[in-house]
Amino acid sequence: MNRFGNLINGKWVDSVSGKRFTNINPADSSDVVGEFADSVAADVSAAVDAARSAYRKWRLTPAPRRAEILFRAADLLIARKDDFARDMTREMGKVLKETGGDVQEAIDMTFYIAGEGRRLHGHTAPSELADKAMMSVRVPIGVAGCITPWNFPMAIPSWKVIPALVTGNTVVLKPSPEAPLSSVNFVRALQDAGLPDGVLNLITGTAVEVGATLVDHPDVAIISFTGSTDTGRKINSNAAARLKRVSLEMGGKNAIIIMDDADLQLAVDGAIWGGFGTTGQRCTAASRVLVHEKVHDAFLRDFVTRAKALRVGNGLDPQTEMGPLVSQTQLAKVERYVGIGKEEGAVIECGGNRLTGASLDRGFFYAPTIFSGVQRKMRVAREEIFGPVVSVIRVKNAEEAFDICNDTEYGLSSSIYTRSVNLAFAAMRDLNTGITYINSPTIGAEVHLPFGGTKNTGNGHREGGPTVIDLFTEWKTLYVDFSGRLQKAQID
Image 1 (cartoon, rainbow, N blue to C red):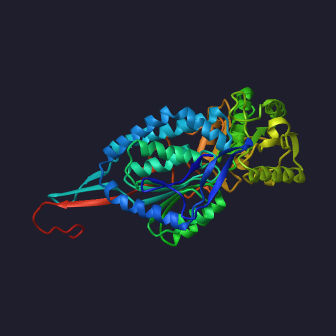
Image 2: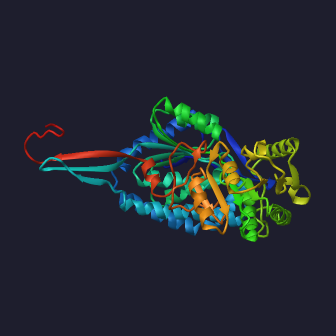
Image 3: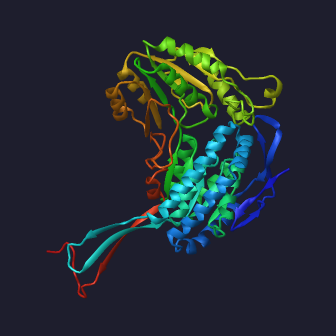
């Protein structure tokens, strides 16, 4: 059996607890991916100490030199992409095309952010006084604690770790125990690229033990978290006591709006990909589809037909279009919400059941499920399910669609299918989400634009794009007086 430890100060070591946890393939419970260190607070403290010590030299390493290491890491990710994609499919279930895309996103992010090593620009401004220069520069913050989920187990770590490193911070990464191997692979690529010992450390284990210790540690200056809203609230509250910077990217209840002038085949394609890609386990998944009453029945008929035809199975099979849920816990959550939907009066058009038979019995497979007759106040229309369940809601016009789309505690992603340029621009203006797509589904973000949401989806920061540099740096203002005499600003 493959066994994996923590990376602390450049060495792979077991947890001081001596304990391990087992990670299995969610498509085949007989396939053991590996054993990982079940870490405790002492392991976190050792990793933070290593990161704090390494910070002294790393912050003084010129940013272009830091970037050179990241460019080498990106090349290693390219060389290892196929192997990493297979590992990812085994540990969290999504199909090979998607896991290949996950690794590719990490490659893209690493190349993009490494380029910022020569673009960490500051500002200059003219002084009101003679013989005086003024400027502002970016400086790193310190030790960054990065807490990442299982659904994008290499892409999301890259969003956090790479910007933190290029700006001169050091990192302690805590991946989800549901998908730790992809983070191990990612960290090894950076280590093999020449990252100095202690600059990047990896600790595996539970949120209760590892995550909480990382958040509370006095030497961790910033926490970047992607995960559930409930956990994000706790992190925000605990970190606030120490006045730490916190970036939260949390839940979503995203909607595709389909107007009566839409290209219906294109809209069906988008709803299938948005609702059932990654088995619906994306914060940007299209779990609601708001359809104009004039095209509702035609859309629903084709949508259901396509969903029924999806090939569900082990993601390692190239013919598979949708893999399993990540765990028994997630499967039970989906089953519970489908029961809630039926109790609320929604109609199951397809799915609504666990898939069994042959090899499916060994995995956490659930049929692509579509509810019709959903009303905006139903729980299945308001709460994040994180599974292959889509609620279809009939609307009368764009005004009602916009209102329902915005009527949720979340505000991550939205989409509209229309041929009207006027409606498209109205949607871009009026949909209260951090991301809006026109004539494509709610998934598909690219690394060089900001990513994040409004309301309970986040706390205002944006990862991805140039804005992520703001997250991992402080502004420092500098004044240089070369007049040789005392000068007083703002004094008459």
